[in-house]
Image (cartoon, rainbow, N blue to C red):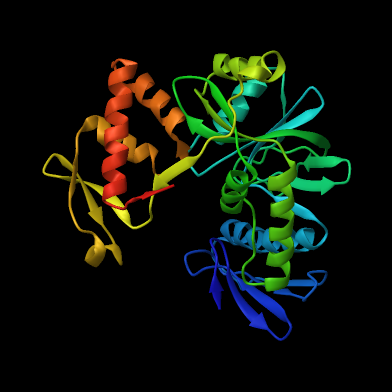
Amino acid sequence: MLTHAHLVVYRLGEGFLYASPKSRMPAFLRVSPDYADLEAWTPPCADAGRQEEALIELLRAALECRAALEGTLFVHGACVETGGKALVFTGDSGRGKSTRAAAWVAGCDASWLSGDRPALRITSRGAIVCGVPWDGKEQVFRQAEFPLRAIMEVRRADFTRLRRLSPAQARAMLARQCFLPMWDARVATRAFALLLRASAELTVYRLFCGPGEEDARAVREILNRFPENIFKEATDMKIKDGFVLRDVVGEQIVMPAGENISRFDGALLLNEVSAYIWERLQAPISREDLLEMVLSEFDVERAVAERDLDAMLDKLRALNVLEE
């Protein structure tokens, strides 16, 4: 048995049985090994609407497995079409992917292609993006496809900045945002091979910007008129897993969790600026971009901000909590 976000998977002969989690209405789906034969059933229940939603989640997982065998990836993100090409906004939950995409629709003459899970197909002539009907809560999609212009990993910021990601950085990011069915080694291997190709061949940026229409237009200006202002690849760093920031009687203190409890030798008390840096380091980020975020958040001279940031990073390295 394997538990996924929206389903529980059981091995059934050579195929699988998908079931909705206990927290949802009961629904079941028998899946053949090649995902070409699906058989669904739903026991009687009091909430047919929620049961239908649960069944759609199971069907989506099976269809995305079949699509991976056919050479298609699904990206957790929002997608718009502008000038005959697609832009995909992706990133961790809560980063504002849909908000940034909506700003392009409102302020840059763009059109929605997919509000949640666009399909990405890589061909010998480039990557193609299309909308799918199991789009998620937004239910914004078009039955159309367009060549991909770029994938944008969204970061909230009070400034506008684009940085090109290296293939390794793109791979790590896409591995978090693409559908990888780990319960089926054959499909997962195929999906990961597609992910490797995508990270090597596609244009992937880290996007720092605000949520408004003016921010979308600023990004469009950089892409269309000033591509020389796109920053080159830079080394990332982030906080290692197993450390949390806690408010203890009004003080911000770094505390270890899990296996790190016995290994963590020291304590880290953070002020307001250091706590802000710690939070930004929960996701991979370059030193240069982190410095710009500090400067946009606090009224401090650049030289002072650089000195304090480097001192903070050196302290994190000494405590062995920084991954570079």
